[in-house]
Image (tube, rainbow, N blue to C red; front, side, top):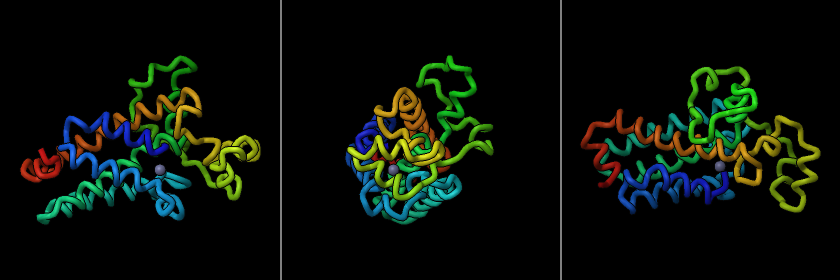
Length: 206
Ligand SMILES: [Zn+2]
């Protein structure tokens, strides 16, 4: 998703739970994943091209949150959580999860806030896949005047054709955004469940 949406969604889900300072660090770390250094050669940050690598990256970052909290430090835990959230949120814009979820309802789906972001059979479905990157067309897609041309040349399973990173891509974006907000809340609740209360209090800085 585009950076302003990552920021907006993270605030929406987490503002009540973190100190303002901690939240800003989490958001900055989330947004940094979409800088040039995070876009080139880091498919796993954005669920590009490969589901397993994205899944593994989330598990690793969760591990860094725990490892940091075992030491007196705290900054690393917020940074790792921001990275984790970026990938978890991008799952809904760069895979076909939203399409698979909508396909269950024969054209009359419930409204976006009712999307289940982790429906078990869909997460495990052999039909779930990331957008494949076709160069150079998927790079041309990001040059605005060339986007219509790139879209004509890109196949259906490409990153560009599957992309749901802004409202420009139509009503499916609202589902991707809603799923990402609920997923953000889920990732927070999971840490709340795992962490001992003292560690959790340090993590939320409240
Ligand atoms: Zn991204």
